Image 1 (cartoon, rainbow, N blue to C red):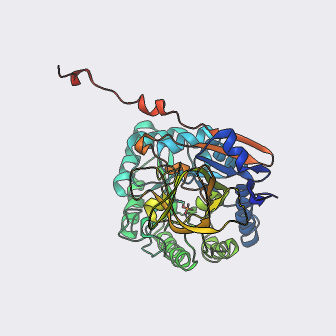
Image 2: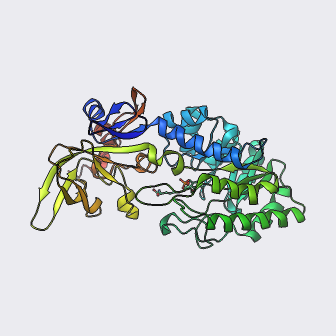
Image 3: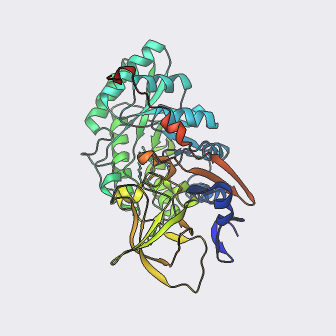
Length: 426
Ligand code: LLP
């Protein structure tokens, strides 16, 4: 069996047991199953092929903020995906992992001069520009370095994405993108530049979308604007429609990829441009779990706690968005009763809680627990809070497993601190 499944009562990724992974690599560890990533890439590609004209091969620019491990990025490159990067760091990772520069797009509201120059020198596909001041910097840097660059203007379509407020990005009061008036000014600014070529528009309205309606609305706004810009005499050869496809964490009903690609066929394809997609979560979320050990099962008068060796610094989503992650025992023991637990980490914050009152099979000290659907925005959002080392990351395919990121060494964290000489007040 492939993917994550139970075999003889033990959670496996493909042919490998999570018990073996934990004893070989320790806990907490992220475990990714390549088969699941492959499945998602194929599903999206098939849906695109099914809906769009056979000659139309959109660029799938994986939003690598979701999971930027270089092994994952290398695999994306092998699958002919590109990358959407949002920092110089992500750009370096993507290039080093083997993503060709001509398949990289660079989004983000606060690109520094250094990052812009890095993108120009790398020769990336396009910069998605999010403001007029940013465009002015790009024009100046391109002029100074005499390097040409294609830019797309990220439009803020002012639509409600119907997702968590903290991951909504396409409302006019969100910091992202530009409104129509500014984009028209942006086109004008580019007329005076020998090196900056405007190629079209980009958009990203939010993440974990589970309804097609917001996409329909946003694509419609984009199409109207493309027609308006074209009638003003501007050439539009590329449209980047962002990411956002939601996945199942609990009982969500995610968007059918074919319905999504049919919508692209209906509204975006007739505009006859290159199409760029930026999926992140859809490709990796359900391809990863965080395995962790129960340090203590603590019972107080009114609550049962499972205190794990993973904390909010390892998987931040529950603390940050009250996000739901399914929590499963690595060893299911059928006959055991279930109990309502508060599943918490060791970090000194009440917010370091993965779940409250969650019914889980009774667990004891030392048992292994898996937090499911942690392949996107899991390891990538980890921090060293409480001077806790970042977990190891393990990749599994079939019978193979490998460490793709070593567990951080505490000394690596501590040694960056410097105590200045003048602090010696004697
Ligand atoms: N493109 C841009 C410009 C983005 O800002 C994002 C995500 C994506 C694409 C990919 O979106 P996706 O396909 O993954 O939904 N940390 C949050 C999610 C933040 C998403 C930020 N932008 C979470 O854990 O839910």
